[in-house]
Amino acid sequence: MNRRQFLKSLTSTLAATVVGPALLRRAFGDAAVPTGEAVDVDGKNLPVANAFEKARAGKRGVLVLVIPAEKKTYEAGDDNPWERGRVYGEWLNHGSDAQLAPLGTVEVVAAKMADLRAEIPSLPAGEPLFVLVEPDGSARALHVAVPSYPPFGRRGSAPFDSAIDDAVSKRRIAAVGGLIQRSIAVPAAAVPMLAAQVRAKLVKQRVPGSFWANASGCGSRIEGDEESMMVACGMGHVPAKSSRFLYLYAHTPAQQRKLKKAKSL
Image 1 (tube, rainbow, N blue to C red):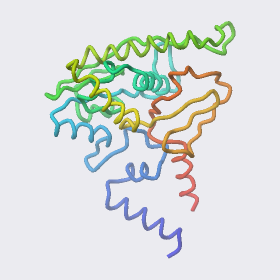
Image 2: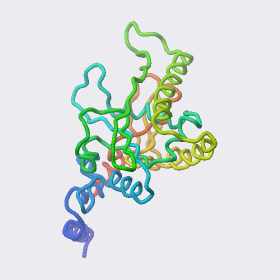
Image 3: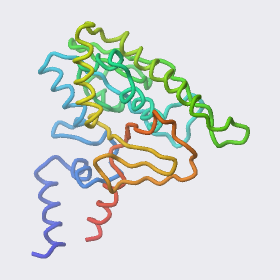
């Protein structure tokens, strides 16, 4: 059997015996399959289903980092996956022990609101920063206004100033970290241990439902996928505490290239 025939046979077998086209296309890195279409045999989003399964087994809650739905155009005040990923990245990478420790008491996953409704159909409209699901199944939205960085590179905007960036970063981290501290109680004595666990599990490793990525003034690279390079020269600078961020998309550019290569065989 030649390579072309083997790939056709493998594809047909997987499609017939696994779950269907959505999972098959995701397995091959199809960029046309958004996060919400990554399904298992029950038709659920895999990272979300796994988080809820672990939470139920351990009688823990679930904290969802909400991924905003993509839009063709954004109005003032709208959040997008890129900006939301920067906010999460700043907090997770640079938050204090007290701001991170609560995550050690829950399962954490990044997901769209549409995916969460497979588990909790009664969720309200909107895209808060977080949804906290308690062990008893009750859920509540957690949100806080996050300061924006001053515009850079536009006519009439202020020149780059690292001190200004740093001050804004601290306010953003304090806003998000404070929200989590107020929402999930943690005994003071347990804070150092829990914070260390969170950094080992969620900072050094992937946050389920997302990828870690690094940005410079001329592109971004996804960790663990060294072929991925998203070039965006000319965008100016990246605030220091935003340089490592959560990439909140289902597929990396490298996965997309592999798919195209597989289709051409």
